[in-house]
Image (cartoon, rainbow, N blue to C red):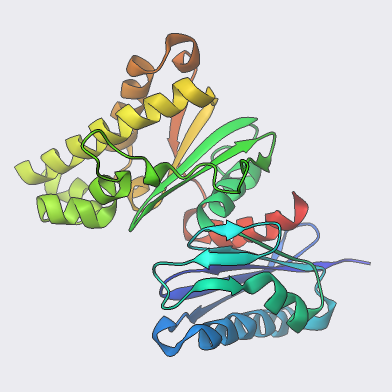
Length: 288
């Protein structure tokens, strides 16, 4: 008998839910607003609604789901499903998402940080498919990361491994406060996604912003490469839209600066799954 699964990508402004079968074929895809300002219970109600509407669209009974995977934008206890904090969602501190969903749907529930979820999707179906040792980094409103080895997320002792954006820089600042999207806009007066078109027009600020990202992320990804010796680094989030003007010099910088044995064969590539990676990866949590 074929089983069915739900994957939920919870974001600061929207919830994306997919319903798949056991072959991972996507049967339906539902987007609803998060509406965080209306409170935690309201957001969870919207998550419930996305699952039931997704099941209705797929023609299945929500009570028959074989499991639900959930990606959330913040630190999580992946063993219990406790969400410690989601900065982009109002009052999301110490929310027992795993327990709440188990009580509602009476099925297996796995909750994970959204960067790790997206990284897992890239390994299973995206730009890192076929690679055993992967580092995934997303650079958008914030910066997150994931270490994935042999198709499984490496969590570390307390479940926080891979938090690339929380590196402390030499001046005492935090990585994402200098290189995430809001930092680029604050420092250079442009949005990350505007950089390619502005460079074509010869805008000097856009080139400075691009050089800032390449240099900063290049240095720290070189250190990651020396530490972890991944085969491939996958770049997701808003910076992935920059394409070859960003990825090619970034790879060159990592090859130049990382320890030679670690960097000899390293590949740096853009993510391949786009905005669906969170929901797709959430389903894959159930097959870890």
